[in-house]
Amino acid sequence: MKHKDTRPITDPIILKKFLKHLREDTSMGERNYAIFQTGKATLLRVSDVLALKKNDVFQANGRVKKNAYIVDKKTKKPNRLYLTPVRDVLEDYYDWLQEYEKKHPYTKLFSSEWLFPSSRRLGEDVPIRENSFYRICHQTGLKIGVNWIGSHSMRKTGAFMVYQQTNHNTALVMKMLNHSSEAMTLRYLGLEQERREALLDQVNFNLL
Image (cartoon, rainbow, N blue to C red; front, side, top):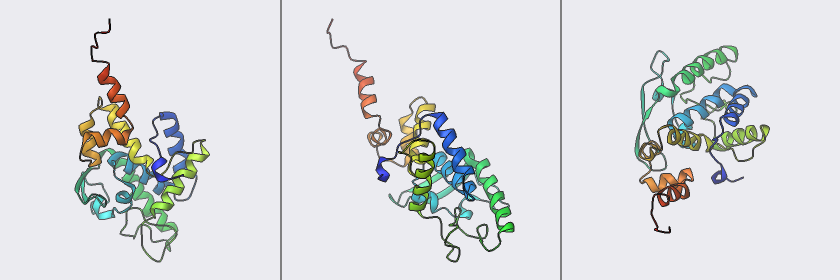
C-alpha cells in the first residue's frame, strides 16, 4: 500500500481498537502510542513528529511546555504547536522512558536527544525512521481488520476530528495543517464533494 492511500480513522471504535493494539502489542508500544497521539493532536506530518527533540517539548523538570516552535520540513514555514491536548500522554511517556532506561541501561532511550528515538539503531542516537513507523501502523491496522491505516493516518485523523468537533471550522484546520488555502484543506480531508453538495442544496433552481 502506498502512503497516499492511507485514510483518517473516523470510526471511534476502530480508533480505540487501533490505539489499544498500538500501545500494548510490542515492547515499544508506549513510544508508538505517544507518536500517534502527538501527530493526531498537533496535525504534524510524520516527518515533523519524528524530528522533534526532547527539549522542543519538555521543560527541564520533564513537564510539557505549552507550545513548541518548529519549522515544517516540507513547507519551510514556521509552526507553533499547542501541546496542552497531548500533555498527559507525553508526560506519561517521559516517565516510561526513564523507567525503561533504568531497566535496560544499554538502550539509552531516555538519554537520547530525540523525542522518539529508534530502539534498533542504538549506537547512532537517531529517531525512529518514517518507514518503520509506517510499517508499525499498517501492521497494527491489519490486526484489527483494516488495510488502509499508515503513519499518515494520524495527521488525517486529527484533522478530521478538529473539523468535525469545531462545527466544520475549515479555517482552523487549514491553519493547523499549515495549508495555504481552504480548498487544499478540503481536498486533504476528502470533503470537496460534500461541500459542493451542501452549497447546491441552498440554491433555488426554480424547478417547482
